[in-house]
Amino acid sequence: MMEEELRPAPNRGGDKETRKGEIETMTQNLSEERAQDSGGLISLAGLNAFYGEQKVLTDITLSIARNKITVFMGPSGCGKTTLLRTINRMNDGVRNFRVTGQVLLDGTDVYSPEVDPILLRTKVGMVFQKPNPFPISIYDNVAFGPRIHKLTKSKSELDQVVRASLEKAALWDEVGTRLSKSALELSGGQQQRLCIARALAVKPEVILMDEPASALDPGSTTRIEELLVELKENYTVVLVTHNMQQAARVGNSVAFLYKGDLVEFGPADEIFQNPKNPLTEKYIRGVL
Amino acid sequence: MRLMDMGLDQLNSLLVEMAQLSQSAVSASMEAYRRGGKGKEVKQMSDRLRALHRQVSDLSVEMIARYQPVASDLRFLKACMEISYGFFRYGRYALDIAEVLQVFGDLSKCDHESVVTTAQKTQEMIRMSVDAFARRDVELARKIPSLDDAVDSSYRDNVKSTLQGKGDVRCALSSMLILRYLERIADHATYIGEMVEYISTGVEPDASPGN
Image 1 (cartoon, helix red, strand yellow):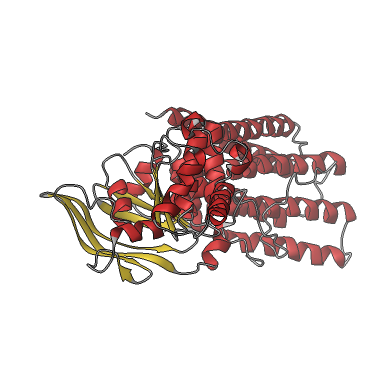
Image 2 (cartoon, rainbow over the protein chains, first blue to last red):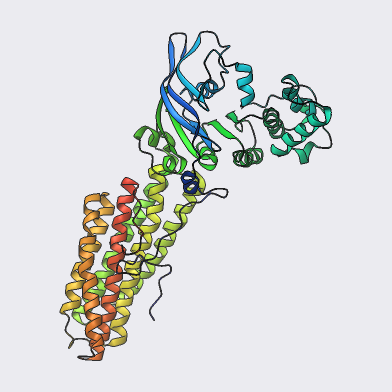
């Protein structure tokens, strides 16, 4: 006669059950990861950036945690790509570009005169929006960095680095038997993973990624996202995206930028469920 | 207006209908108790609430799949599913009360005071939860738990009294069952209030034992 509860009801009278059911991602429990935060590898302190007279970043201060994925998110023109490129001085060659403030990598200011930007870029690798393999063989693409930086002493050691890099980029199984083929024969998703392998081959600590999946189909995007989550075990990843779902899927921390200002920076689950700043709320809900 | 807003409006309409219907169902069952009726009309209301709860769940899941909502949109959808369940349970407990009336028969010689007094408090909690949701009134939602203790006490006192074995068994058992259902309704009202607060503030209801 009396129907049982379809599921446990909230019990205010004593034997209360803990309510479960919060979203857990396939690959990670963000709360646990926050508790195990291993500290900042990169610190941006009072960073301003200018193209000529135009100020494009204003007083950015944030800490990027080691072995985590930190996402820079915001509308087009907000400065997220510029911010990313300040970390390994990729804008050094841009005419009239200048920065003030500090970008500290493991405590060293990357803009100090003693820092060689070429060496810096071996520590802080970069993957771009559009896959940009060199028009040479798959092998030579990956071997390119170790060769010019003289990171290996023998052919067999170089072979090992190429294979290990392709394995880390989840590409070895697909190309291991055709390394001498042109990289341009690969699909878009494979080309992007090749570019990631190329970045890994010089043994970086940090990988900067600027919209790495925006030109890829959903299947290739999934592969890249899975790869990002695997890579953070050994690398610190900084990702620029305006794909909020991607930021939510893979990000540990998210920085929201708007018109050159850092509006909000926090754990991804908090940013996407309960943002503190109304601008963040409007942006992620698509009403900004 | 975003595409998602049409779905959110539809969800809101469904919940407003559920709020009104669940309130009516509990009122009808308690009115039957007071007047010696059977509350047979409650069955139809409870069935309708079950169907509406299903619609809310289906629409919420569809919207998550289609629009991948975030922030206050996501919180609203989560809260809608929880609040819908609460309204559905109001209706189901109203039906349970009506079934007590049908199974136990004539209760006119029983002392109704404790049940009627507790029902008034519970119905006030329902009204507050419905109004708090309709107006997204966090202050009102926060007042709901203050009535919950009185409902809990009434139920516990009745259980103790029943265990002493005094009085008519039919009256004692029917009162205890109805008070139990009212106590459960009151808990759902409290939880609905917490979800109204969650929509606005993002603060999750405290699920620690003892709360």
